[in-house]
Image 1 (cartoon, rainbow, N blue to C red):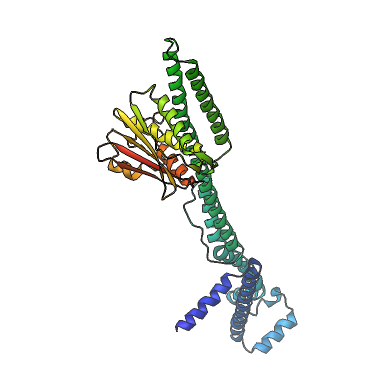
Image 2 (cartoon, one colour):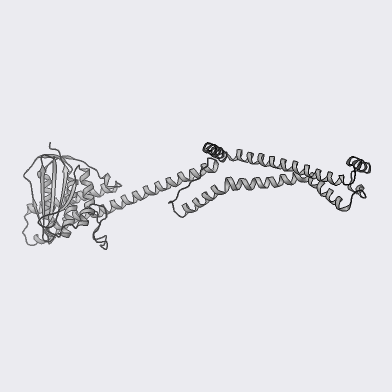
Length: 404
């Protein structure tokens, strides 16, 4: 019997998938057949009941002849039938004549009611509920109507629209998060260069009045400050034209390692002028020419130093070296603070992570190490964090830098 049930299911599914025009025609034809059948049955029964009444008064044919002689109007029937039988005959004759009209009217009402209940009520209810939920900005639902008629296709279109709205909303949130990350990165990255400039300013303000700065040193310091200001201008112009950290331009050039080390020394010197923490820098003796983007390297270094200064006790060590085997420039920053907690080791590279949620955003964005990791990736390298066996945190950044 399973095959019979399967065929029946397919048949009813085909009926349900009929278009509204075909379905309405089918409903009308079915109801018309029912109306015709009921009308025919009613007329036969009424005629039979009339014949039964007439049979009580003798031969039916003779009785008919008498009636036709007097005329077909009911007024001429008086005296032939009893009053109760007259009323019955009137009722049966009325039903026999008018039953097709009454059945047709009832059939039209029934067809409309059934068509609405079977083909319109459920999909309209689904669509109404869906519109209300979308209006309330609730997209966590599914629109399903297992039918291929016009409203079934409309429900499918609503479901496709819902999925598009979800996709658009997710994309909007991604753009907002990227913009939020970019704004935080911009604000974060401005801190260290501004701190460096303040260090040079404090240095000049401290020693110029005492006459301890030579003209050559003064000019050199002013040149360094001008370079940092130019770098800030270029950085601001770059950040204005991009939409995410991933779009930060990567422009490697042939650069001497000694030139990069000199820039690191300048940053360390400036930061040592204004911070209680003493920063020590150890240069490598390698002076190869490599393909590298020194702006990205310096940005990573400044971000790492900014974090280390916040947590260091008394000193910070900066080490730069070149790995001949891996063709990488490696920067290591080690402080004498409390080091990373277990949670920080797992989450510190994620964006907006702050170990203490009550920290003010203005004090710490929780994005510095995340930015460093993304920039290292862009330069073909990596960023790793660990705790030193001597105590304190160790952050190591690597940058792919082919020798020329």
